[in-house]
Image 1 (cartoon, rainbow, N blue to C red):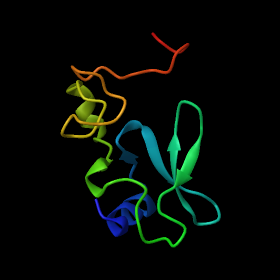
Image 2 (image 1 turned 120 degrees about the horizontal axis):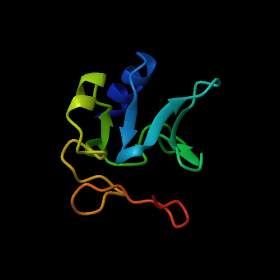
Image 3 (image 1 turned 180 degrees about the vertical axis):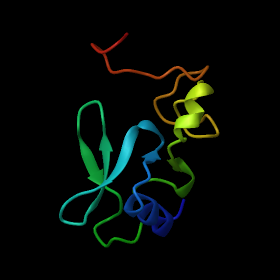
Image 4 (image 1 turned 60 degrees about the horizontal axis):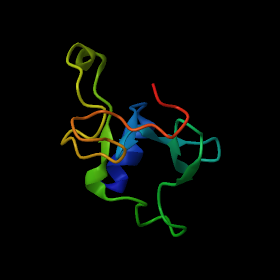
Length: 100
């Protein structure tokens, strides 16, 4: 997704992820677009300070599947299955101390 596509999707209320479903793009009350890591709440800006270069590759951003996709589980990473934090076989990776 391009920067403009990401912003438009977030502004439209869609959930945009970066790399895997653990990272969500959020627009804060100041109008800043941030990438938040859900397990611990840490975040970085969606772009560099100039606001033009993504902090990630365009191909790594994706819109969360619709609720209908819940009937077809299997991938918690990017649609191509190559997200960060995904172990072989699609199993999500967890930080130490948070293993299930």
